[in-house]
Amino acid sequence: MAELRAPLGVYATLGNHDWSDCPEARTNGFSQSSIRRELARAGLSVLSNEAVRLPGGSYVVGLDSAIGHGSTMRPAPKHDAERAFENVPIDASVVLLAHEPDFFLDEDRPVALQLSGHTHGGQIGALGVLASYTSRYGNRLGYGHKSVGERHLVVSAGLGFDGVPIRTGRVSVITLVSLKSTAKASFLQKAN
Image (cartoon, rainbow, N blue to C red; front, side):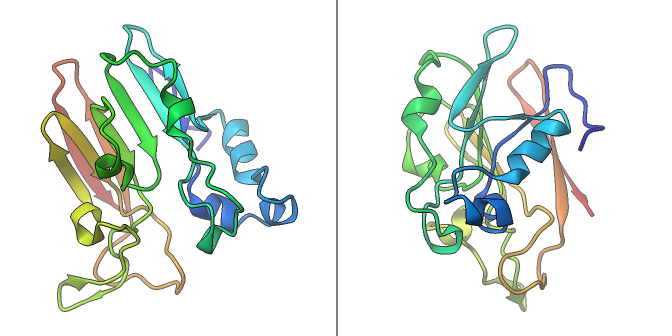
């Protein structure tokens, strides 16, 4: 990841496995994750319920994982949308990094584009039916490009897995999203 470069910076936010699968986090009460430290060491700006203003007035907002129990075993959600958006003007153009896609339908924030993962794209499926979604909205937010009005969501299947280390029905991908100043976005999925 240290080789990633972008003109306006490279940003990341943590997901539930960055907490639950981190031995350091499990021993410190889930207050710190070694994953965050390693991402920062590689030169990525890790956003945890915070916003960064970009040149021109756009913002990148990063939410920590919304899951505070279950697979993460954390005592309370780390996700704090109020804190993340507190300094973002209501009319600003926002790209939101939110690991879980449910935020897209749960809250009506002025977000032009939300980038998410978490669902693994429906990691396990048979006969074309993808059965393993970890969204309250099922396959509605399971994978790909979604939109509601002028708001857009891209859910990547990512590289990992949940539970059983098997992927059927959805290959691992790295998702590349190219934004243009015309407010149109092009979405390109690259299979790994």
